[in-house]
Length: 284
Image 1 (cartoon, rainbow, N blue to C red):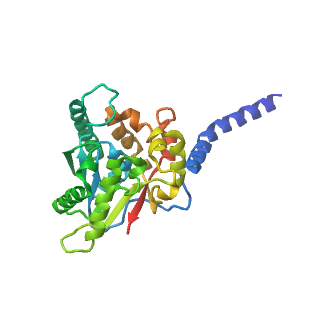
Image 2: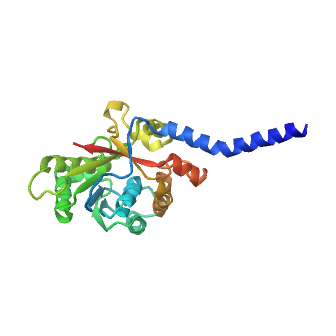
Image 3: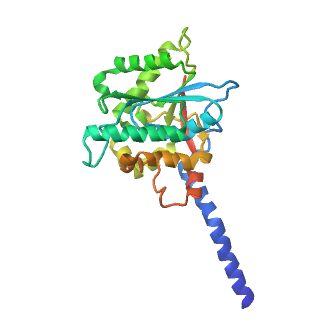
């Protein structure tokens, strides 16, 4: 009887030890496609490179913050351009647009500090009003910042959906993409690569189940959806800092919870091994 009791205890202990690893394997299978290659960095270069990350809102950088940290750690320079101060964001009626712009400016500055960006350029174009500026104006803005910074690499949202359907996301991605394709290879145009943030097909399906933003805005026709990733970048070592970047945007926590659902309910060491990569499409 005593021998049987020890066997039961041993089996229960083994189950407790192995359960987290089973959860990690299940989580990875639910979110990641095995046929998409994984890399340790966005690109390989013998010389330090300049990267321009071009986004419409404070908090957009969260989606790529692990990759930016990796690039900086490897000796590259990262310049972040944010077109608006996010005054049209959801504040649950607690702040006026002017107040929210001030708060989100401070949040963006804190986020940039946590990432360690070389330079933050926080602009003052109208939040949720980039459509009114027009695509040509956005392209001119993008070109001016490229000429000012002379980056080697560009990073942005995609041009089809803007990750989950926000017009500002899509238009800023489209403007940068068109500028890149129209000028690539020309004298005095420095960028040689453009990478767009995207999601794996499995992530899209999970997001459509869990995220109200995706459910409202994502195209019903999958052919019109996000570009398929060419690869992912391994970001697990930066998870705690990525989480700190996300939390720095205090006014937008209700929106950002869709980005990392249940992160506050699952132990960090488990969660970080499931949400351990960021996906990219290279524009060619």
